[in-house]
Amino acid sequence: MSPSVLAPPEQPSPSAQIAARIDRLPASATLWRLVGLLALGGFFELYDLFQTAYISPGLIGDGIFASGADGAFGMSDQAAFAAATFLGLFVGAALLSPFADGFGRRPVFTFALIWYTAATVAMGLQSTASSVIVLRCVVGIGLGIELVTIDTYLSELVPRHMRSAAFAFAFFVQFLAVPTVALTAWMLVPFAPLGMSGWRWVVLLSGAFALAIWWLRSRLPESARWLAAHGRHAEADAVVTELEARCCGVRRIAGASGCWWSSMCFRRSASSVSATGCLR
Image 1 (tube, rainbow, N blue to C red):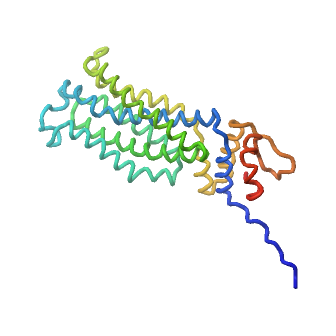
Image 2: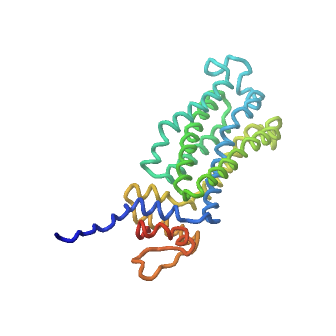
Image 3: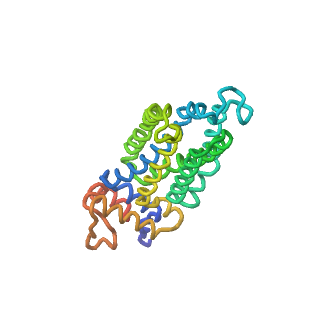
């Protein structure tokens, strides 16, 4: 009887290796900075979304919106304004956000930010109800894309052991936008600082701050999980290697056949190494 031959252990797929490396990262200041950038982006998205109710009195005061039910589209202008916002959100979230699966989280993330920022600034410069309402729908499309993409991006960026805390922090920061836009509108809408209507200031401020976030977001890496899932393993490896270096200091272990570990990450995963082999 021939001796049994043990089959070599099956190696994890490249995507599984990338995911395992991300999940071993400690909850470092580097990761929290990335979470903070995403959260700030979400803050200004919600600022833009919730300004719908607060700037309507200013639009009525300027004579752009009719005060009754006979508006530009055969209904109350305020109702059409709110409906346009949510119609745009539906189109962006349901129909266009899946483009992030094909083109990448970071490009779609950035594109949506530029989209709704440009549309918001354009809306703040309009003087007719129809143009304001149509552009509000365009803004909503960008917001819908961004709201879905930001959650996907965040879930893929952080290790699973800090995912709940990361989402809790991100939502805390994002929903600070609600009292912020209410206070800003209370201070500006009844007045005309520097001769410009207060509602325009509320709108244009969101565009200006979003441009600052766009610049900061240039520091965000593409999702390594997305790169690996699309066969771009070298790029995914480069992203995770950089995160490992910034999060906990990478060193090469002699005889580890090219496996990279930080001392902290290694201690976190020592129990899993024997079962899975070298997870890069």
